[in-house]
Length: 582
Image 1: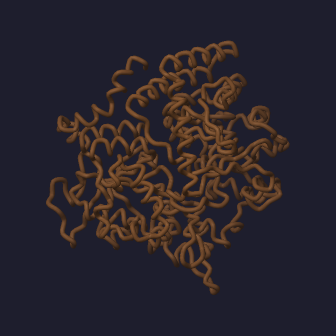
Image 2 (image 1 turned 120 degrees about the vertical axis):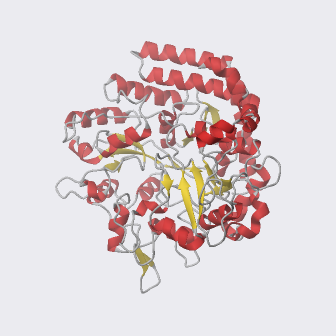
Image 3 (image 1 turned 90 degrees about the horizontal axis):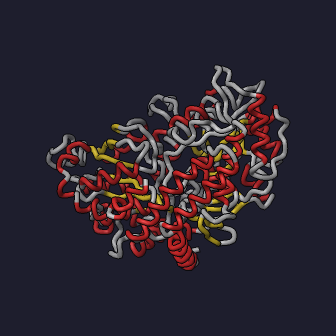
């Protein structure tokens, strides 16, 4: 609400000043969990050590000691265990509480530079460059050097230190698009597989699909569209996300800006001709037709994920947002009579956003808390997850269990391995390792190297991009989708039809705003979030337009044009800097 403006303005100062006064909160939050027991003396080399971890990149309510085949390798290699703290919803607020108390967990995963900046401002991070001898995998791996150099020069509070180590360094993954329009395949086929030319065409198509399947087999109501608000920051983020279908970033530069990576232009999302207004109108129209889940404004991501798993939503905007509906064991994708699942169905006018080659890594980072009692062991853990050979293990599972080298020296996923991968959340790993395939990366979400990075053997570090994997194990549904596209992969189809918008690493080079600018951004963000959802549920077009006008006017009074000017300047500087690396 707007009456919180002054509180927001002083937020960073408050976070640092309250650290010394937060003893009670320290106890409530549990503090740093190094050692076998809280308050125990430093563990010897023979003793197991438990490190606490708060990894915001992994939005999950799961918590506790890491278990499974990957955790067992960690223990075998280092005598370490990791106690993951739940992230789930309101991760930023949890982070601010930890910072205020001065009790960051031992290992921290940041999901953007603003979060990392708060911890650096509070002086709570370890300068990793002072522990080079403990981090040979980081400082000795060639692929990381540009990321290290950039971070020390540009994201270190002007200290020249390495406080935050980027993740996902390396070339963009082939055929791996984050934002892709997907439709429930069987219902789309029943609707006649109509051609989709524009974003708005999905409304007619999805309406017909819901008419054909108004309820699931278990009697649950089906919706054309459904959203969640957990990840909203300065806008209705999952509404803005439609922009990535058209090569427009609405997150990395700023959720208040839309940056076209094709034209290299950036403008405020509240301009009259903005894509953001088009996206709001899209969901407003969906609601007017009765196609939008009424829970969209209030439900959590986990609630939405459950609905996708049950097949209750017809349209998805993330390539991975399908719950368990696309998992083989769900009985849909390889159903011989009616192959089903969420399938890529892009509109003809789209330019799907393709991530840049991450020469300096992406804006997800790992760091070590300064109040960690076992800094050497924390370094050992960080070194472990950045070790390319360990990453190969985490990405693919154990050699001889999920995959093998064939007689020609080529890595190949085994038949048993594909079964494990396709049912990644189920505890069906080969018995000598145990657990589920997702145990390798699920709680970390990002590793040091992109899965498409080429290793010394000439093959990518991750199984997805091995030659033997690209067209292997296609489901019955995927085979039908490929027949519709006329290609073996989505990437081939998109490039063939000039439907790719290749991004630039400049999107990862926007510095955190000053405290004064951040105050304006927060105030504007509250207005935009609130009014955006009101617009989606407006009773008619007149109210929709009226709410838009009020939102823009209120944002202008909070310094909207100053914010736009700031990001325009930051973007131009980022483009110049990016040219040094690309």
